[in-house]
Length: 371
Image 1 (tube, helix red, strand yellow):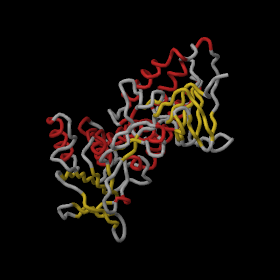
Image 2 (cartoon, rainbow, N blue to C red):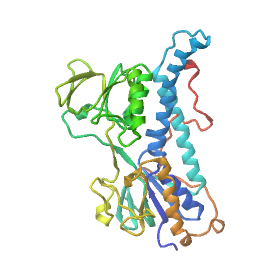
Image 3 (tube, rainbow, N blue to C red):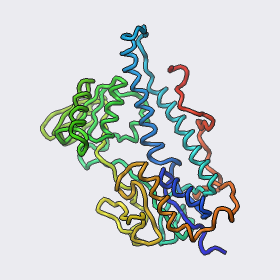
């Protein structure tokens, strides 16, 4: 009888966690992956993919404007934000189902619930305990905001992807690529955009020529950029909207205020301190070149380590790590393949999928009414 329930338990079903779990499964390991939300993680559900779909939608404004110069007569275009968001959600449902199917095809068991590491070989999920030879932490990160008066009124990039309506005027605080991308998205759809940055130019750390040229292009498109500006407080307006007050005394009104000033690792409540996993001052798990933490059988990859927080970095990291433990696992040919079950630590019955799942949808397609 095996000493542990699994050879590997992965906490977090984002790009890195799914990649590592599938690779370990291909080596014949008994693998479970734990997720308290949806399968897919930041990139698929709250980052790269939905953001790109909004970028593509915003670019049509330029095409309509250019069409007349090429002989086209175009009726005044009309944009419907809720239609785009519905189409975006439909595509995310499709991609989530693909991720679920890939895990099942790799014989990875999906367990729903929030995981807490009870000891170096035990994970608690909804009051149940599961044991594993190795644990992989792939819980990702989350947007962070400063502790200033009125910060409860702001949204992050997470909420910006699911707004019920397009704001007429929005203030975006931050000068990194997330802030810049959303400034372009909202401006492309016709919103008035004010971007507040602490430094002289956008995209600190990028090539200086690019930074200057980008700011000029954005201003030329109507984005109002306030350099060397910091927010002192945010107040809700008497009727609707918000007022942003800067440290220099300026007041800026807007329908929405979005912060894109950084991200932090999702390690709170995981139990890392109790089992001896060392973290830095931001809470990020400290790892070696093989993504191994201070506890030899516990690994961490992706944004939870706060290194290069990019999907192309998160995906290969666990594949490399699983190679180091491959020899202890049964080879794929000696272990029968089977369809993994999906179970919930919260309930004996599986979670019902949303009716919007469209596993047969081959590409992102906006509804006919919006084309």
